[in-house]
Length: 171
Figure 1 (tube, rainbow, N blue to C red):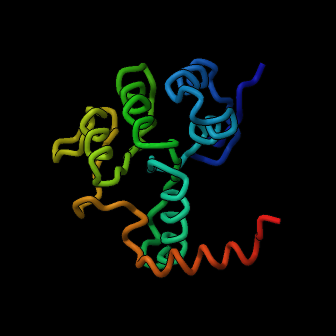
Figure 2 (cartoon, helix red, strand yellow):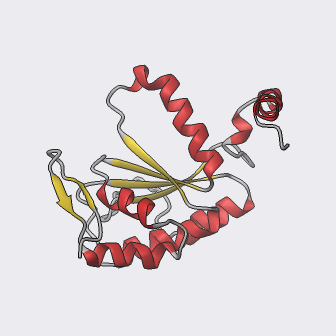
């Protein structure tokens, strides 16, 4: 029975190994459904960003759309983890398991609040200048007590909130 399908480096279909699917299912602890697990396992992009929440993912994806022409060689996937506390378990599982990342780098991006800094430290792959063998990294946003959302003026969020309410009233 096939667990999932993805593309290899050459764009050909490949079967997701059951052992890898079971491992990702276990270490994500229900954080991702089977489809998100399959996308993670089948990604052939050289870089994967793990972010705390869905809002972080949406903001970074939109920012990249706007700036893509300035960074044409940058090719990555973004996965949200349902909160900072879920990321250390995922990174620990990937670091300690017999799981091959195929020359891929996975970077966990944490807010620089107390929770984000604590979770980054617990991930045990905090970024350093020495390359780790697994290609796993964890970093905290550079601005103290910053979240991805705080990089935008408050008025932008207020305007977006009002626009969303006008387009989708709760009636």
